[in-house]
Image 1 (cartoon, rainbow, N blue to C red):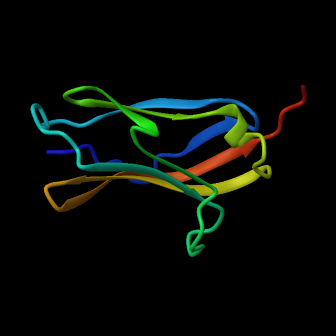
Image 2: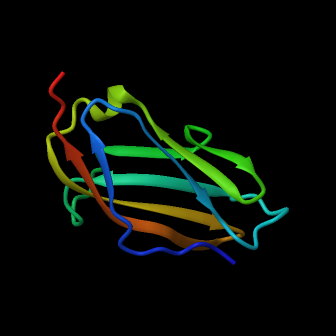
Length: 110
């Protein structure tokens, strides 16, 4: 019913846009009640450094695709290093972790 990739690592340059699409199989005609892209410095942190939600950084493209977009302003303040992220979707009270892994923020020289 849903895409589930664990340990899917991402790399971005500090100050760049992060943008990618997530495909969810078997969801034709079903809307997510919520979808969140959350980034934390450490797994156990209670605060997140980036959080995008449905209609605020997470956009439904069509019945099976959602786009996640983080602006350059949101990545330019991040320290260089490794972070942890996940993407969670809620449908009819059920919660699914679609993706999770590490986000590496690399240096920008210009």
